[in-house]
Length: 532
Image 1 (cartoon, rainbow, N blue to C red):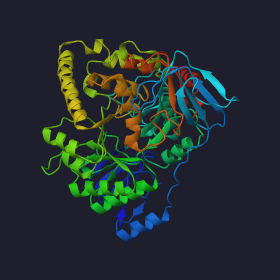
Image 2 (cartoon, one colour):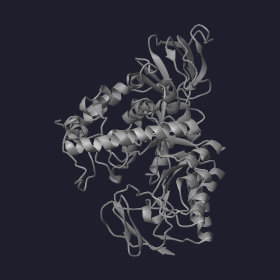
Image 3 (cartoon, rainbow, N blue to C red):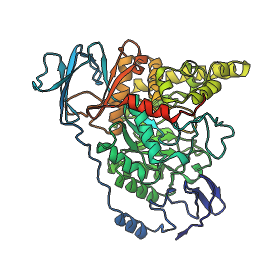
Image 4 (cartoon, rainbow, N blue to C red):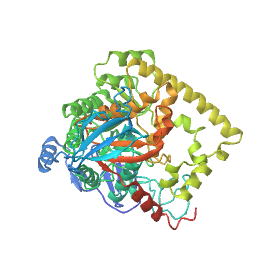
């Protein structure tokens, strides 16, 4: 049996002489003597007493009935014809000028040219002349619920000190992981035209899955689809204070690996998160194999390898589906990608190298940021990352180094794409106090992709169809009959300039217009005491 001792302290994780200590959001410490336990709240399989033998595991699995697969609600029975816009369908084809498309019961039923679509006479009509329509974006790499954007009162929270409240400008921490904050994040994604976002590995408790199902059922029409990965899978040594892995499952054996994946399968996750830091090939191989048996994709955070038999190449050979951060490939890796039968996807993760010298949106915040970030927080961002902060000999030296690193990274991405890697949108927003705001940084990631010799049309495909394919989302990613009616109406053509994806006029999810005016007013009200 694995015995736990309980006492109250702050939130976090740390190593202990007797094993691993998981400090839960409730303030309870649990000291684990063995390496196999889900570091979650009491709602999970890890309780005051937990057995690690096979019979007990099988009993635990049988005691918890499988979750029902979420079913998307039919949000409206009204038939609406949208006509006159330039339509970019997301499949890479030429745009349809003066298009028409029909939405019924939250789905596209017809797509074509204006005057050629056969819609019922009683259908409502929306004139989008002069606008451009693109599919709802899909963010393949985010961290939902840890940053706080509402209720700001002007009190600065510094990343170097942090204090008990949290870290960084946005008060980053597991204490913010509530259903209210998760829902606020998903509404922010919707505001920015993001139809769905996969949250990578920071999930704990039951409320994420409940909220996911509520959104799918149409209970929160202004929220983007929430796709929690469940707890991330990693090694015991990778669970350290400050790395936001409060929800991590420490995997020690192949049996651990298969049990963890079966647990995630009962939660109906689309893709699991694998942090590989010195995990042995048989163990991560078991994770990948079991995941694919259950139709679950595997996204990997390439880690630090100290044993020569371990490498990102070996994980790709084992069948991982998505590289969640860029890598610098050698010819062996490129050939591996060329020969691989199963598609391999990758993301930019909002380009940390470019971050050191290219952040004009903090010096002169665009409307989207000013509407979604409190004034005092914007002031802190300018102070921390703006032009003045980038002056001085040392700052300029670092920027020059990162600029060269960025150019090298762009060359790597060009090589990977040439070998067959399918690049998708993945902003890494909301993670580890880097101040990458959810929603807005999906558009920053698209801008960054455009610097790697991708055309605006290529970038839009990466941010829609390819990201949907990576997650196995058959009903999103393109504007086509049968797909969920998730689309963004723009005031300017993104094929002329990818920055035009930020010129949002309207957003529709599940066939219903997102109340962006109402969301803006709500967020502004939450900052009414902010002197910034």
